[in-house]
Image 1: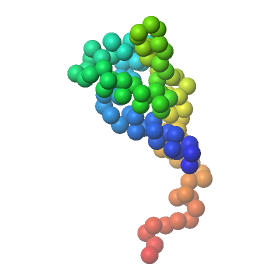
Image 2: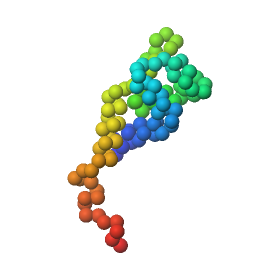
Image 3: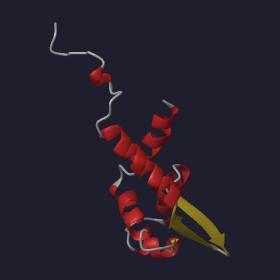
Image 4: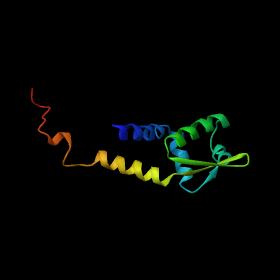
Length: 106
């Protein structure tokens, strides 16, 4: 269940369209917060909130250089999330539906 909780944070983070768009922006490479901010009609503090959520769930790495913060995708975390999504949405032999349960029976 712990694995499900960790991945739930990732998918919850992706539930906001702005955060999903930020990931798309970062897929082209590392970006400064100021560049990301230019694409949105939001305050710097709101962007910081979105970036904190993306960093906390592990999808995004951050690094500071002077007064600027740079963000990049955490490829390892993204691969794990993709693997998890594939695992829970694909057919498998040990699925609960293969244990003789039949919801149609009374």
